[in-house]
Image (cartoon, rainbow, N blue to C red):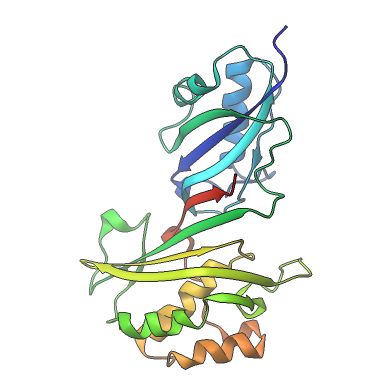
Length: 250
């Protein structure tokens, strides 16, 4: 009999047609589809454990999941085999064996990188509607960068999380925020050790207000200090958000 092995998957997906990552009773999710595909491949009842439970409509290029199996399929071949069983909007980028105790979520050495994409033009581009938020008014990139600079470092980000967030510690560390423009598309890239519920989308919504001139860059510092969600910008739409990468210090 093949001994139990833990397999790590790097997962990419277009989240448009899914009700997020986590299994739930009233809608199809990425985790549910993945569970079914892995179970069918291995002949076992498999429930994957994901690193990041992305929201409805949010995309990923590098989410991470693990599962335990006694299957004799070589770990590096599982990506190919699973991709034959998954819909086109979910792709296994890589599969590999990891130690039995390896966990994708409960650890101190995680670095996550997100991107938020904005299509900034007078009229929307129908080809960008699934992957970008649309803003029709001019945006000042330099002001957005100046505002973003206040968010870098260790801060209490309670002003930048959903009021339903059920965590005691709202302190997080943002390593860097980069903002650039590529044609009509503006990209915000944010890297940190972890993010609160809706934190990246609220940061994006706030920096959009800075870019449009509703807030001065210094307002971002003030929002951090007030510790009030009502002071920050809106929660930006989900389709602009991509979980780009998760790195582990192993």
